[in-house]
Amino acid sequence: MQFEKLDVWKRASRLACDIYKVTKDCKDYGFKDQVTRSAVSIPSNIAEGIERETVNDESRFLYYAKGSAGELVTQLYIGVEIGFIEKEHGLKLVSEAKEVAAMIASLIKRRKGFVKERESIYDIGSS
Image (tube, rainbow, N blue to C red; front, side, top):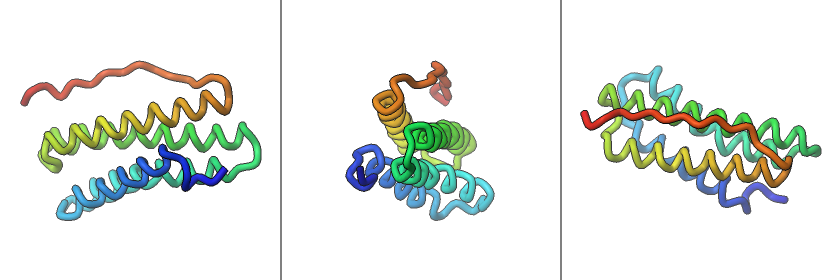
């Protein structure tokens, strides 16, 4: 299978591009570096996993991608909360990152037969 054909890889790549666009004017280079690295890590680990030879190797990298999606969601919430990212746009990116994470979980489940999941909710309120 070629990773370029996977919808999850395409969406994760577009998400990474969107993150670069939303942070291009951010003057906090530490935040910008961290959020762009986690965003780029998602499609990169999907690609690396798909290119691996065994299901266990593939799943390991898909879990890394899923973990990076969680990291990105956290950073987006923080970016919104501290005013680095406009709230409406940031929450759309959070939603997309969560959908990509769910797609990765589904891919792991198809490949491996199960996926480790934890339910978590974070509400940044209406501030």
